[in-house]
Length: 347
Ligand SMILES: C[S@@+](CC[C@H](N)C(=O)[O-])C[C@H]1O[C@@H](n2cnc3c(N)ncnc32)[C@H](O)[C@@H]1O
Image 1 (tube, helix red, strand yellow):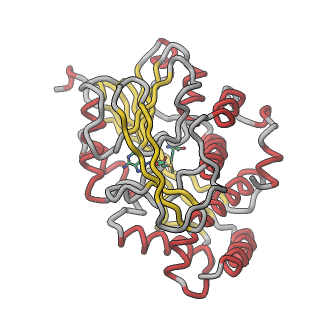
Image 2 (cartoon, rainbow, N blue to C red; image 1 turned 90 degrees about the vertical axis):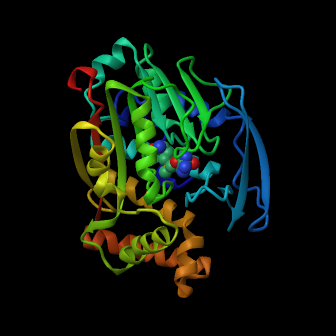
């Protein structure tokens, strides 16, 4: 955990109201399933883990693989590029606060009143469930369901209005048609193949009630502001490698189109340029997040750039990139789009 992160964590009063921070800490510390990232197996070696999801009695097996000391989902059909270990959970928690500050809210869809009265909500690809848990605490009358291909979410100690499932987003979800009034999905562009987004969104729309809202948020790896050569090299490495695996690192820019294609109406979106290492605390937070992402992506960047194959050289490159970003005032784009499933009256 970085110095900045340690400094920020106890300052709950700096966080947006209703962050559920105490709740989040309880779950991250006590998660009985978490494996320390310090446990190292040789690259390519696998470990199996058996997990029972909350509401279904299905026993699901998740296999991990290890690379450069980090733990990843090993399923051949899962192209996801980032790790699924404790270090990555820490990063995702902090990234949640950063997104919340940058966007000023946890969601844009007009569902506040419905959440207060009580609705069924899905967080698709919930990761360690930071958003899910915070929302569940803030809206106790609503029920929150999180899905993820890796069991990063809390599995025993969790609020009564939270349920979690191991599920591959591109498969039909274990929910009946018209279950949810609100579906949230954040940061899946490094997990869903470009040619599978339509299938994934079609199934999410199936489980959405008529009149319900779906919201997607992605970071763009393809367009940014004031980028110098170092940050460009890093971002282009993700683009090159991601495209070679069939991913769409520019998915952020087609969220509206994909929602339209999936049959959503009343679509709107917001683009926020988050500063990298300049402009105050948000820029500091984003640098911390960016550095952690690219430390996790070391195996990918180093395979594409032989001069960065040594981890110490790579760390020096990241340090130089940090300086470059503040000098250039680099900012990256995060895009949030929401749309509504037509109500039966509209048909
Ligand atoms: C960048 S994390 C975002 C987590 C969470 N949405 C958040 O914003 O904190 C992406 C998550 O998607 C999950 N994921 C990747 N591919 C998936 C798939 N095909 N089906 C379900 N989950 C997937 C990963 O395991 C990871 O937890």
